Length: 491
Length: 147
Image (cartoon, rainbow over all chains, first blue to last red; front, side, top):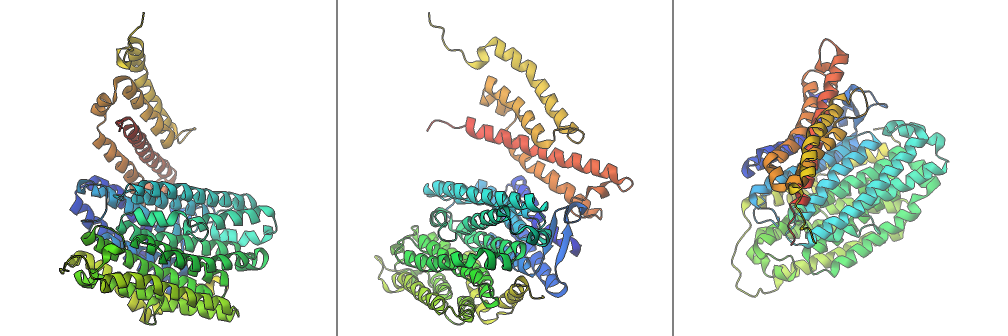
């Protein structure tokens, strides 16, 4: 059965979604969805294990062999992303919906789980497939589910936030489709490995350059790379926290993976960096994202919006790693993909716990919460330290590699901006911590911790930011091998 | 002289003609569905045509009557069921020893027949889900009360 694992990775959640609609009963659906998500995680871990010992796996869907048929291709890079997506999915699934800001009543919670499973299926599909058009199809599955999930927030502005994400996301998806069409016109193939073989022969044509432009801009919209990030703050702020936790930790990360695939596997580093010169554009934009995102985060009064702007800055770190285009830089970008997923997923779950007690996402409402919910707020502090990049946390590992990559290229000012942006992170995290611990609340604090069923998933993610900060074998080790592989070295 | 506006169901011609048309639309939908593997057509088009017959009924006789014929719950179940038929064919071919969606193994004696059967079932799944989603969209819009 292990040879069918690549297909089961996406088919399992895809089939689970309609089964949820048939089961309907809230508790039953929840247990079922958690079981599915955990099985997905087990599959992803098995695939990573198989790939890291035996090399890439190819699976011919429907028995039609690549390049004509659709191929699922698992290598070290996407196995690593599969693990992140399914790990976050299994934690978020286990997080209870009670008290979360969902506009649907408990009898209709099965629809939430169906949507979440579809979104997971789409994200896993984008990651696992070896076919460019198939990426677009799965992108639509995950995005449509994501728009609906965002619209489930109780705040009515969630609907407009979901709608503007829909408009931007559709533009992005269409750009990816146009880019795919153009390369198909020039090469007659959609298979990624086959494209990589055939593109160099036609890479001088304007059509290929246009297709590259469309693909990069399209994925950058999905990635919310500066200055295409406008949809992100509202979507993250008004979506239910649990949805934000899932999307912030997976959707943008998968888009980053697609960008890496487009740049390094399909078009190749030589074309992208030497002929097109993507770094000339992407490097300054990444630096601006890091500065502007962090600065904007400092001035927010809403905790979710603060974390959303911080995400824009963190995405800047990832694209910076890509534009450095050396092993250390790319390792930094890939490690940050994983690490930021854990950190932001964890922090938004903390927000979900806090909202259970305070009911308002403004920072002022958090005053005195350090004493009311000590364990939850301790999780926020640890997550915040990771975001800043204190040694011993995952944030430090990512920034270490990014600084190494920048120094390796002799870009001292880039290294300086990485450090400066970390200082800005200290400012916005400290603002929240100060309110939570040092401001006296309006009424006497009573200890009312979030229930264990919420604390455990939150601490699993936050705890793992410490664990992977100390034991970097899985993250930095795999990312480093993947980076070497992408830049042309052997596995 | 002002003729009072008649409701759609009170108009004899509309009522009779729509009654006459609905079976043919349904039949045409089924034709497009099952002829899809020989000629133009297939699950998507068939699903839309099939749903169009119900739209006509709903437009003439009103939403309440239509929902008595096709309850919301039924639409919801068929939405899920169609996807399950599709994915289920894939899993069946997995269990029979082929790759996912490899229809050739569905008939162990004749690969060509297996391919035929596979595509027929998959298109049926598509048809069920598409006509259910068309109806779901119709219900969602027609059921809106002026706020």
